[in-house]
Image 1 (cartoon, helix red, strand yellow):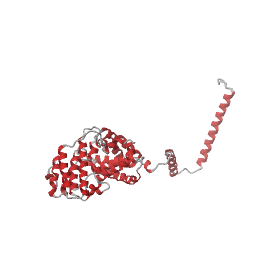
Image 2 (image 1 turned 45 degrees about the vertical axis):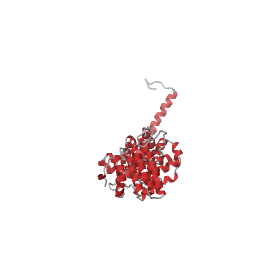
Image 3 (image 1 turned 135 degrees about the vertical axis):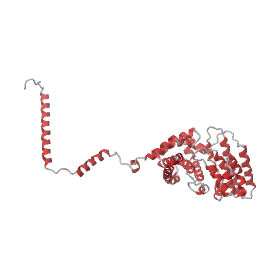
Image 4 (image 1 turned 90 degrees about the horizontal axis):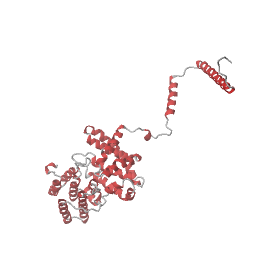
Length: 379
């Protein structure tokens, strides 16, 4: 044993020898591979790149196959729209903090599991931004139309299969579509008002459709997270005494008597007097100081409460039905501060004024006065 070298136990000597032998074998194998490699042509760049791409692809492949929808990253515009809805738009849809919270938190959560509801959210947010940013209005209106069309494409077939699992989603989307119908820009010379009565996307029919969807699914929605929105949308009574403002009662009562005394069929009389009774009740609720009673929901309740025969009279542009619609514009005018309702009361009154025979224009004096409008401002 060389001098100065520590003595190793037998097991240690065996381990050291094994390590040396392993190094020798590794060196021999490396020399052999280099000799064999020099006899082969070098791999082409294409082969090398393909091999590297294959390795990268294998290392980056997910554990499961992604569908096109899952594989597609969200667009920046969609993220912008969702952020705007949850931080701004949701607070403009109701006057009650509890309902605002539903729009801010619960409805988007439903949308994450039901893409067509999320489309409705993005559509309304885009329409809101189109109003807030006039310079980019065209861009946001295109986004709104795209998302709304996609939402309707899922919504219509789903209405034939309403069940507990999807009733909350359908109800929330129906409410969004009503707001969108108001929020969408209209031509200055037409409301799309009476035309929308027979249209599946018109504001009046959408409000009525939302109500018709609600009634059969009442118990299901009451059991879910949208129950507060559902209760207020339905206009549930609060038990507080309600009174009609004097001027409202006087004018509605006068026109009601005019309808009763008119030489009309009993169907027309019933349709008109019932619509007037519902309208007076909505005025009462609008005046209520009950903190749990939504002014917005009560302002939009009347179109869903009128009889189908009244809607038919509107389709026919029946004079009495038109005058009642003008009186409803007074109620809607009290919500004019909401961006998506703003201007609608004046446009309704303007349309009715244009369609009525001039001999009946005196019935519009009260709506004009109540809304502080003047006849010369009407076309």
